[in-house]
Length: 63
Length: 398
Image (cartoon, rainbow over all chains, first blue to last red; front, side):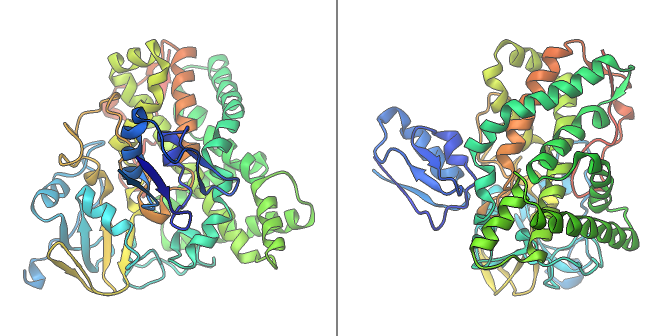
């Protein structure tokens, strides 16, 4: 599974960081940073949750 | 449907926490329904989770309170003396403004603020324990904690927090007359103008001073924008978390088995906070929009200029999304609720709110294990007439 983020769509709510702090972080200005582009299988459920809770639709997955 | 068959949307809550039966009925029968809005105009009420999310993330809907079609809570909202606030802006104006402040509210920043919030909560509980019983939880803990935190973040002297608390309450109450509203707005704007001017002169280590610095780096300070941002963050930081603290405390006292589960395993508190946010959805009135163009949605046509009110409390009890949606289940683990809204305007302070609620819940019941309501619960008065739901006064003892 590959994780992709769109910094332009990110509104810095931080929901993804709460769901998966090992995969998502926030820059000093609040915008998402992808820490792990291909997270291990045990985080795949969390990735789907991150996609569903992102208020800016800024995260998507390639499986 | 003929024009005279359009039902008037009742808005105040009837059963203490849940949606009105009329709103549930709309969700089942017409999740995007033509109604007479609280401001007397014809518009739309949206009650299903998926449609609320769809509209809140659709740029064809505007957040501008100054658009005459906006579903304001009052029949004649007075013109604001302030420049449009961040929550009123649409793309492409909104993003750059939000980006000047989101860095102040990241998960990391909120985690770093945790120890200070803990200190503030402990001081207020110390004072409760040292003081007379019963005590009003709203005044002793629920209001001062978020008030002190947001004042410190912004760089507002806490000595002035009473001034903000009373005026915040005035602004969110539907009982406030237009004159009172204009007066409260004027007082706040004038105070914040002086504060911003002082920080331009003597910057300190706080959000407002950093915002001034950022504006300087980007080519010039906009005084009106700064006052507007200070206004928005202060007001948003007062009534919301405060009401959630009171309601959450009441709810957990009514469900001792859930409270015991949290005591046994504090790692569950954050999940419980999420569920309490969903369950109460206290700020649904903030979720209005107005169509910028004609929009077709699931067989309904919303015309340009029509107001749309998202009834998020009803959407957060949508059985399509939440199993046994009317039950408070602290192990539910559902973050996809609408309590903070959705889309580009989703609550900026949500991680601050989560942190404050988590610390208060963990600390209050640990330090005052015998905490209980001091009055029969049926005598409690709820804020049915305010745009942010809550309890007016909550006498507790131990």
